Length: 202
Image 1 (spheres, rainbow, N blue to C red):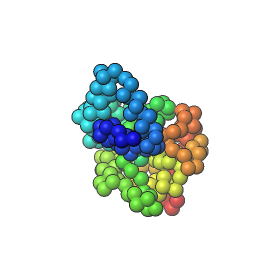
Image 2: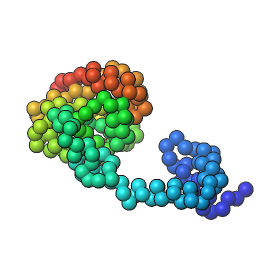
Image 3: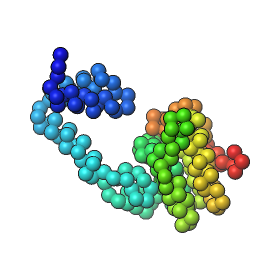
């Protein structure tokens, strides 16, 4: 059965999202079609608002509707501690777990040669510049506990070489092959509290 063009297009767009196949996308679209027009419009306006009102913080790279973001402007945060994460989603997970009260640096990617993924150009240079300005005493690398996370962590460590700053990484509590974004509060708390300093030869 041929579906109307707008329906086909929305199914196509939705199925491009992570973890969403064509059947799931179709169910979502038909769910929307059963809603009141004002609800559909509200949904559409919320999606459009992402491009109009959401940006990346010019300092740390987290998503925000005001630049600088609330992490960078909060006077109560411990600026001696900086947590380096792969993605904006990791910031959200750590914040919701309430296990960290320092500042962030989002590198915006990971190092994965097999998937031909690289850390975005300039991200590690900006990190080094932030540390060189002074004030940061410890960098906590919060990358996923899998091979890509290891490679990314070592790339971050190398970018900070020569600087007088302690570099540690989240420790046990996180399952190997897991993701920061899906870890629960207790797991993140254990990993944060048991972080280990990364030596130069590690």
